[in-house]
Image 1 (cartoon, rainbow, N blue to C red):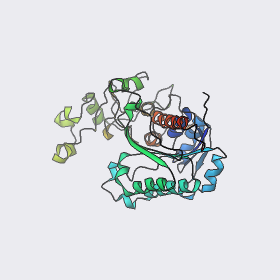
Image 2 (cartoon, rainbow, N blue to C red; image 1 turned 90 degrees about the vertical axis):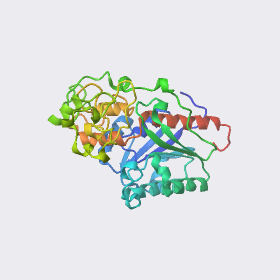
Image 3 (spheres, helix red, strand yellow; image 1 turned 45 degrees about the vertical axis):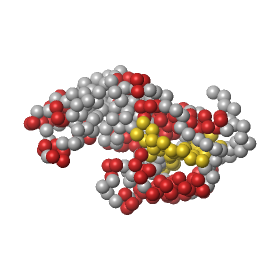
Image 4 (cartoon, rainbow, N blue to C red; image 1 turned 30 degrees about the vertical axis):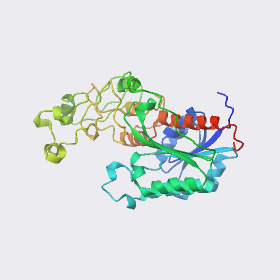
Length: 355
């Protein structure tokens, strides 16, 4: 596609296995490199995107290094999703201020201020908005001449088949910028069926002979009985008393209805976390097969292409490692929407002499 506006050169910080990068590339943005501390992400990032992966802690990454990768492009973008564990609702009972990962957002801010790119985007958990560090982040951008917008995105509104809510921030030195309008109505939401129903049937603990990533965790004999007693969209409350865990029999356990559940074929999936391969970790039971989601199914619900490789051909697929990469990723389609929003913004600003 020919654009009348300049090509955007981008750096992806905290790039992981490449969900954000892949979506930005699909939107026509030239990502020059990804930075992440997890060496396990090198193969999927480089294999699927054909750009360099720099394995280092962002706290030691220099402004000059980022500038070298960005080159001389007239429009530069720094994109990233700082580790969200300190801000997640799952860790709010802990002292997030003491988390070592809290500092990563400060490092993100340091590199933005030093490189001074024309564009910035960040994706994170909605709970980040509740912390003073997020206000510091916004103020830094405003002080450095950016116009900013941020919104809580409900993933199904953009064709992503999971009920994921994410904070998306966009910032530009060229003027007002915002996310493109939703692309799907409630009636058009993509379902679990549309995403994964075509995959070959497999049993718990087994791996598809045609696709090593279509691999499911084993189930204990007790959990096999539990999933056989589970209904799509139901919960452990559908079981006989003999199958219910002791913790759920206690008054405080009654409210935890979204664990040990099957997904529904005709609805989007729940949020894909790093633990989506465990039946007891959420509503991650397959709609009709007696197992939890496979790695490939989780990747498809995260809108990775079906041919996206997470392990080299001769490497044994380790469920825990690959599930972590998939669950931590920015959904590829959400990343493409972010990229298209940036392109749309540049198109509207193309008569501005600053571009």
